[in-house]
Image 1: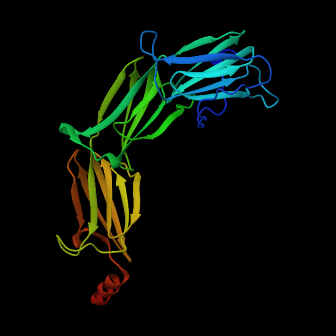
Image 2 (image 1 turned 180 degrees about the horizontal axis):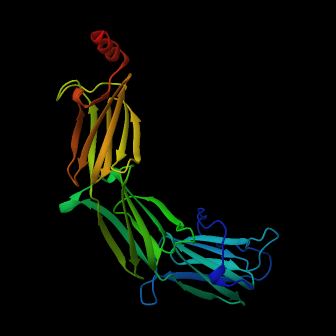
Length: 298
């Protein structure tokens, strides 16, 4: 016998067809009315529920056969007598109930025990972060033996309401695409909208190699950005290197043709800046400079 807590239903992320009132088999059928609530005390959910009805016994492939689907709030289905597993999905929240159809109109209600989560992030002093540079990923709270967590929802946009079962979730906020990452555990309460805002201590940086302060950026420059411990966090090629970095001390190495430049810089949270690499930052001269220097010594 399959326990509901161990149930692994197939295809729950797929789109369900609109409400289906068509009899599923020849012979006697029963009209079933399905509805769902967030909590025992809340009102019936009026829209956005995806209903799936499964036969309770696995098929030859070990999967529970899907016998009916419907979409909406309160929905109706016609089912032959027998036992079924009914699953209601509301966003990423869901609940499953075993029902028995005996004949005669029947009403079944599921309690999802779910709420909503809305995420955002700011810089120090509440400075907003452009939404297009900010993403969230929601993971299960419990880590496995290797410290990893199962990903529930990737790339959640800020100020988007995500429906989740009540519980604690591990949320990762990423500003930019390098190392400005904040992790936090957030509790979703049943029947409530939880709004959480995290603070990123990071800044937007633009690097450019110039012949003089305020000069034009030199094209075809290869960039490497390293942390204070020597870890490479970003490599790119171009006249400019733009990125978001977490606060801290960094070293930038710029290579143009056969010349290599190096400079240390500090990222202060919320302080966007342009870092110019100047001729005096030359670390390794090119072959022409070395030849000229050798000639002067001779």
